[in-house]
Amino acid sequence: MRTNLQSIIVFAVVIFTFSLTSGYAFQKNKDKFIVVLDAGHGGKDPGKNSKYGYKEKDIALQVVLAVGKMLEENPNIKVVYTRKTDVFVELKDRAKIANNAKADLFVSIHCNAHHTEAYGTETYVLDVGNTNRNFEVAKAENEVIFLEDDYEKHYDGFNPNSPESVIGISIQQEEFTEQSILLATLIEKNFSNKINRKSRGVKQASLWVIHQTAMPSVLIETGFVTNKEEGAYLNSSKGQDEVSTSIYDAIVSYKKVLDQNVGENIYATNDTVKTKPEKEKVDVIVEEKQTEQIYNNIVFKVQLVASSRKIDPKPNNFKGLSDISREKEGGLFKYFYGYTSDYNKIKQLQSVAQSKGYTSCFIVAYKDGKRIDLNDALKTTSN
Image (cartoon, rainbow, N blue to C red; front, side, top):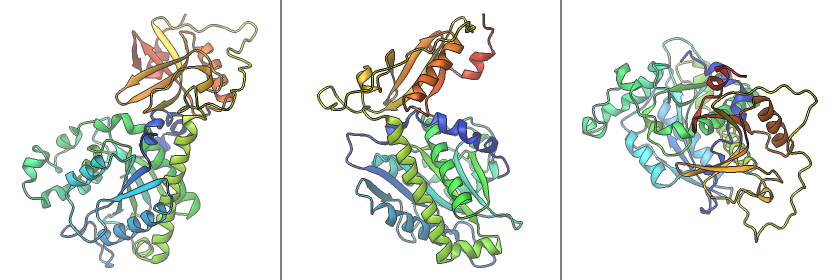
């Protein structure tokens, strides 16, 4: 509960990564953007209770219902609930509901607890690095498994009390990490900036409820019911209204970012493009005596966007940019601009792409045809 995701992975870094899989979240072959809202705990599982009488399962449900009501007013959004009443839902079934709905987002809402008067909000994404970070949080949220019938069979020997078992959680969520961090960051910024809550940051933990979901997923700890003042706030109509509005606004903002990152003509076909793309004024910025920074066996590209739909990599679909390449990874098509071993040149191309409106584009690196971490690529010796 103490480890920040390195100052929310620096918001600028977070934002530039979010176009990585952005197109997936708004699929044109679906009528609506599907959000699954998961009220934590319920029924025989009360979640965290406090000596002040505040119950996590009740607060989480009220916040979920309020968020859902606002989202349902948007005709382009469909809301699916894992529970709408005080019932017990097994962890595996929560993820199953989201996967069966082919959801674009999974948002699980909870309250926190501590033996001190700790307070503040936290939003978690899956710890795809399989480390032992935030083990106590993961343990607390995963222990609901013990309330389920035949949990040994359903969870294949997984033990929430074992750090080794938690670390061993599979990383099926890895391809959605950037999107999950985007939503988590927007939520925490809203909590901090819009309703003046103390944000404890975006964090990572090995949480079973989100590791099985096949879409971007977050778990929100809306505050500490064990803190007298914060618990009273979360239990009040005012607090629940403010918290739910902040989450709603973040979801809407998240969807807007994805829509913008996809680009004006990303889904267009040759017979539907009616607007003439701006003629590309500059493809490569040329500076006198520009020093080359060549990395042998490394290729750099600028990733523009990603989409679940296959798009013709032509300039009229990418705001006039040429030298567009396309790669398929899983269910996504990723679109890149440029191809060079010169790092200085790829930075110039990134500036060109940003000037065209791809403000969230970022540089990626490949070695021997396989994608590698950009920092690792830059650690190698350049000519």
